[in-house]
Amino acid sequence: MLFMLRCRDCEGIYAMYVMLSMTILTQLPKRFLWRVRPYASGRAECFSNVTTSCFPSRAVVGAVVFANLAHTIFHMSSGAYRCMPPWFPSFGSWCLIFACALLASLCRIVLGVHYASDCLGGFLLGVVVNLVGTGLARLHMSSCRCNSADSSEVPPLALTVGSGILLVALLGASVVSVLLMLRPPLVFFRKTLHAFSMLFVALIFSLVFLCPAGGPSYLLNEGSATVDEVIIACFLSGVLSAAGMAAQNHKALKKSIPKSLGAFVVLLCAGLLVVATSPFPRPSRL
Image 1 (cartoon, rainbow, N blue to C red):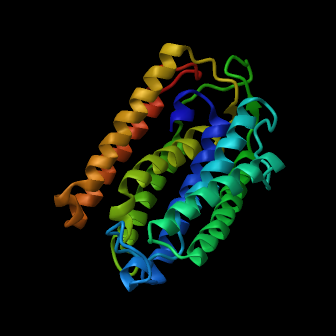
Image 2: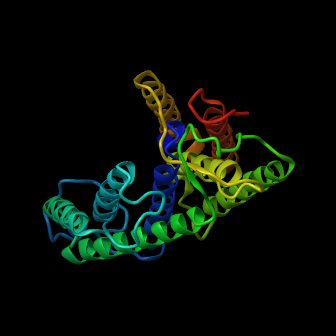
């Protein structure tokens, strides 16, 4: 969302698909595969009271994903990859990935919350997440033209009849998705309300207003935001993120499906309103 607020659409779309893939793919194994943590079975000293399944290690998944994401976005911002992230990490990215994964693995094993095999599973799952996220981002970007923020080829950002219908459909699909994740056999949405409330905003905004949007498709890859605008973008993202975390940790929301769903809808609408109306150098907003 922060990238899109700054009119860095390519980086925003890539990060959004990778993070969305990680949020979903890391929850599914935890929900259906159960393995007792080492400290709980008396095989390690207890330094933590985590009671969820230990396979795979989400900390290692995050290390792999964030290392590759940071390296790739850095090169995208410098113009090395233009609007199309590479399928496979570069040598430099692999070095960063291995270093971060090894450090995360050692920390989790020392804490007694993971076996070495959990960390290996987390590493492999992280690679899968990167591939899935990159594939979705490349598919999305393949229908787009990549322009600079001041290009005369960039059409105005407007809500047409076609994009309006798509917006309503995506909002409805988001609500249905959340309902499915709130009920058995998934039942993991309450742990990810914060993540999905941010990621669905970016997903809906990019599908409705960026590419494809039922009209001329475009991406901005050279946002000209000033320092003040960057500060405002960070502030708005921080406020929305804090609201999502507060809702996710609220005891009353954890115990009620309607309240959890209502909180998600409020956060989703607020996020879309902020992104679509923020005063940044994207051509005419709503």
